[in-house]
Length: 373
Image (cartoon, rainbow, N blue to C red):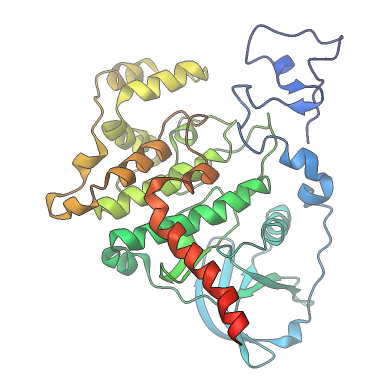
């Protein structure tokens, strides 16, 4: 972690330039008002200390691999294979075997998933194992019933969408409060068979601890869900990139259109966003954060108007033109990442009142049931 001098240090005079490194710290704390620093959970990793975020020196406790029997291959990714398995011959679980191509990446994913445990909508980590012969590490998690996104997507009502997005935001609110960015929020990384029952945020392979003033790789997230700052190579991004991704998912649910932003490739993805958001917000963001736009893009963006999100929703889905839903989409798909709504504030939005009422009823009912037992 980089340590900066505070601007209260007499050897480092205060600067009138808001971007100056001298303004990054005040009295030993990172300054949330600095343009390149997150406005929320700014000092979380500073407060929690190295034991929380220093994954390279972390020594996990490994479980007994003989307790597990692999049953069925479920799928694979660039860095892992996933299997259904049984623990002690009776309890179904899932095992993700991590390909040891990048030791740091493996340790980071294991460390982060262990640090975000305790929230209902985060995939539950049961155990960490390692193959003694091959040296292949694996994470044992709960086995979650999952319906393919295309199937689930096509059948969701407006209320279903409220539950689904709310649960994802609950997972992210917890994750961000732990000083962690997920960096690959998308439907394929959310396990769900019924949005009113189980929703789990999974696949933490790209997740990272947030440290202010650190430059991060922009080669994260999946193209359709990449935020404008990522697409424009802004390396000081923060937790807000996850909120953009959820906003895209909500817009997809309202419009019933998969990949509502699809530029065909990374280079043209920003164009598909500008065609809806308009060019002015992008230009204003670039000016504010001193991000260079090439002249051709700047001139082209300047001519592109904003299309109201309601116009993207087909007439036969006019009930999905819910004013609260559209207001939330607007707040989540705000180009200026420091003005984008946070996960914590999004959970308080009127769009989710139905879900909050439901949760309050469940919370009230549980003590009554316990009293009657």
